[in-house]
Image 1 (cartoon, helix red, strand yellow):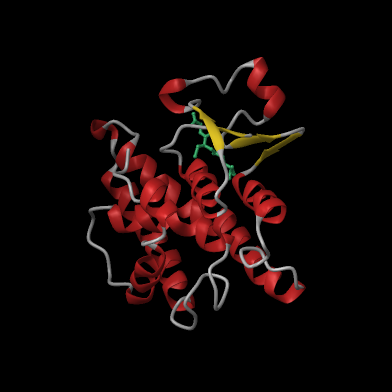
Image 2: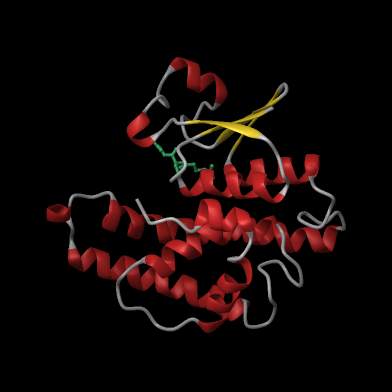
Length: 206
Ligand SMILES: N[C@@H](CCC(=O)N[C@@H](CS)C(=O)NCC(=O)O)C(=O)O
C-alpha cells in the first residue's frame, strides 16, 4: 500500500491526496510537518533530503516534489487521460505544472503566509498590498488562459488541474477585494464536484 507523508492541510500534500482519489488508490497518510514536526530529522532526511512534504513510498519507490509524485502516480496507475502519452499533449500538462511551481506558487505562497501564518501584529500592510498586486497579475494570466479552453492543459481533465485545485481554492477563499475572474470561476465549478476535490481541496484555510 502507498504511504503518503504529510499533514492534510498542506497545499502540496492536497494535490497528492486528490490524485489518489481520482485513481482510486488505497493509501495511509502520516501526519508530519507543521505542528506535527518530524521533517528535520535524520529519519525523514533519508526519505527527502529537503525535509519537506509531500513524500510517498510505494513498494521500493520513494518520490518527493509534489508534481513528480503526480506524474509518478498517473504513469503507474492511470489509464493515460490524466497524463497524456503523446508529446504534444504531454507538453501542455508539463508546461502548466512547471508554471505552477515557477510562477504561481512563488506569488501565492507569500500572500498565504502573510494572512494565515504570520502573527497579525507583524503584518506589514504595504508589503501585503504589493504581494496581492503581484498575485493578482499572475491570476489574471491564468484566467485569460482559461478563456480559451475548459481545463488547464486543454480539452480534458489532467494532473495539471489536480495541481492547481488547492491554489485556486486558496485564491477564492482569500477575503481581500479582488477583480472578477470569470473563466477561473468557471474552471473551479467545472472541477469542484469531483469527489477528491470535495474531500481534500474544499476545506477552510488553516
Ligand atoms: N516544491 C515542493 C515544495 C514542498 C513544500 O514546501 N512543502 C511544504 C508544505 S506545503 C513543507 O514541507 N513545509 C514544511 C512543513 O510543513 O512543516 C513540492 O512541490 O513538493
